Image (cartoon, rainbow, N blue to C red):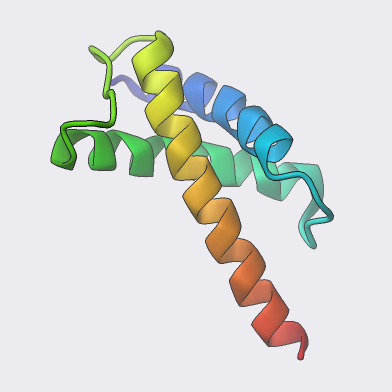
Length: 88
């Protein structure tokens, strides 16, 4: 997946991840978008390892959005856990 497509899919994944996991995040919208972009990379990696997660064919399609959103949700969850531990 090209870097531009990865960023675009990451933006969509960040928005979808935020819709699926609503709540107040310490970093705000910008951090959520960055987590979505990172989630796109994580989702692509996980999609290659686990056969039941659709990876897509490297373009802007449903498979890449699903895998990127799964990656964004995982990273958003980890981000929330880490920031809560630091706040205590």
